[in-house]
Length: 62
Image (cartoon, rainbow, N blue to C red; front, side):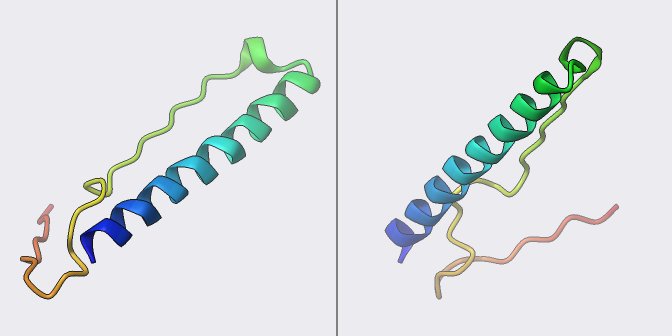
């Protein structure tokens, strides 16, 4: 199960990389790349095993 979750995470990361690249290309084509700050934050604990039957669920209180 954890191998599959890692595969899914890798696929997600690759898809996001492609889509962010498209966004950057569009901003560049509009001539606004020099006026643009892109901040991309990924915070999902990576390929953690939350879906596994032995995983502990954690929560963050704010």
